[in-house]
Length: 104
Image 1 (cartoon, rainbow, N blue to C red):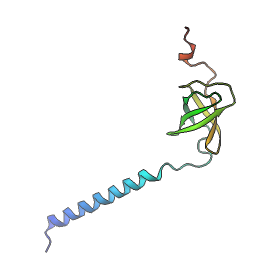
Image 2: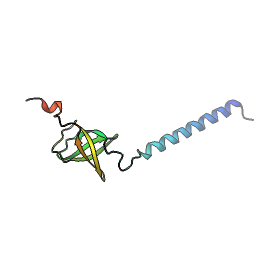
Image 3: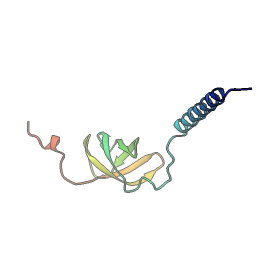
Image 4: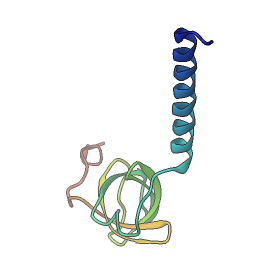
């Protein structure tokens, strides 16, 4: 017969294998989002929007465009809507970011 220690050891190994499998599965499915989940979310400009660029919103890097001129890198933006994989954004505040306000 198997000893109690062997049974416990087999149980622990099976639990660890199950946890490893669950972690791998969750890592590969990616985030689950709906069509309108990003509307109203705020993010940061990663590449200056002139008027197209990239923004970091909802934990992901998105292609974005603005209808309000140029928005510099590092500025805060709000998502207005989403068209496929492109977000339409607006600046969170119309103020000029601190770095852009510095003189020469």
